[in-house]
Image (tube, rainbow, N blue to C red; front, side, top):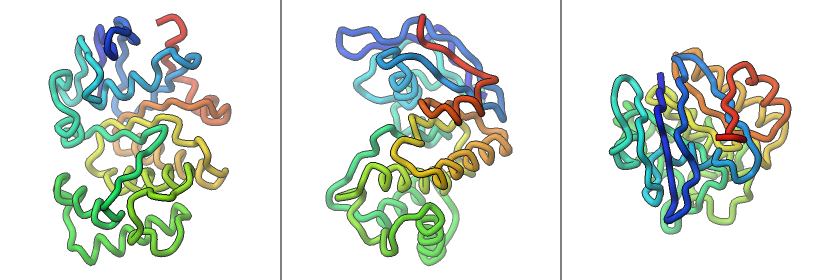
Length: 217
């Protein structure tokens, strides 16, 4: 479960969110809607703990309060965010990053098992052979960056309690969109919570039963 109460957020002198309240029960997906500039992405970044966002109120998961936690502690507590525009990281290849994720998140398995798993994930999502040796997202298209981040979400499924998806379908072909649906369903099956921002009409219709509209928030 994630419970957000009286959440307000600002960046610098600009207030973007004001007194937001909602609860997402285990196994539920919340669709977050609203026009551009209404604060959809900011809401997800606030939950994730982006350091330039000043927030007040309460964000509780598993009866633990996140509001004063730094980003890395929220990640270790079970929050994962797939960004609208995943960054590139100079000087580190994809395999090295997965090794760091394995260590920080205490995911069991040997290095050889991790290599086999990541290669399988890259193949499953449709990334080129040898992707694990490339500098992380350097020279990658927007769609490839999205796919790369989705493999991290799948890899950490067993650790993730709250999955934040910020336009995960942007720039992806139909077959990859189905993988997003599969990821959401698997998270729900494990009694995790999903918060989804998307402009895709198909995904909006699929998850419209539980919706937070920021149009007038």
